[in-house]
Image (cartoon, rainbow, N blue to C red; front, side, top):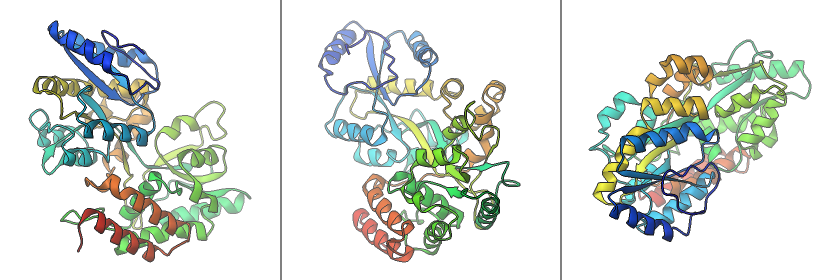
Length: 426
């Protein structure tokens, strides 16, 4: 693909190498008095026109800026590896980048993304955005990214099989068993038990539901404590007691969704994307699905794991480009931009006020209904070491839910390895 002279909009994958021609055009553009900004993001999957117009509006309002967009691979781990390689090497051929919710502390600690506190003071973010996303982008009191759109773990339930959404874990199991007794072959609760990051999200949701915390007051990742042991025992117990099928230990989001959408399960933990799939005209469960907060031990609404993407600035670019990049981030994270992404790409806004927007409530009622769930979303441990320790968490969590190790043994092993990797301890 050649280097365009203006906005390039790509919804698929693009090559991530061969940017020498782009750099030559950049030098020519800046020599002509225009500053070229490059924005790297993951595909939005949807009609190109609304996002193209959002970008074009920025160029019209900033006529001395030439904006170029380049799409990354849709797989989060591939995008992460690209940024690790590029930013560690001091790359300056892109200005604004998307960062997964767990990347920001890592990139900030490494000095790869710019401190944006001058443009987005933490106190202003706390006024305008949900607490969870702000917690993920403010590191040691400084802003290193701005929430772009978010995701949250939620509970799906069959409205034709249970009287209401369960509030407690005990109710979930009771409702599931009652429905299973009436319909042979029906499964109770499907979730993501495979050894990957989705399992960590499920475990942390259960940990919070048992009253636990991700981090201690001094920032240590907490694993070997009572709430974590209870959470892992609960998830393993679902399999042992037959509420969840044994195959759930091999499920990711799509395996869970297919079982639930085929009408073969009462409950499902998943992300909001599964709603539109469940409501398709050919879906066996169309019109028979409700969505609710995850249950907890005591019955208060549970917290779903926070997912989503933030916008950050490459710390290696010049001060002039950094200032313009911050202006682009302000444009792309504005309430109007939130509406564009919600209405056209089903991306959940990180600003509470947007959920009250009349047009959103009319045209995207499902997204508007997520307000009470996203208000309670929590990030996984906000630590610069998260990507370093995630393999340990996934391995030990998986061993526990699969019955290869007791929850106590798995968490002791995990705590010891995580403390070694982070250099922390009691």
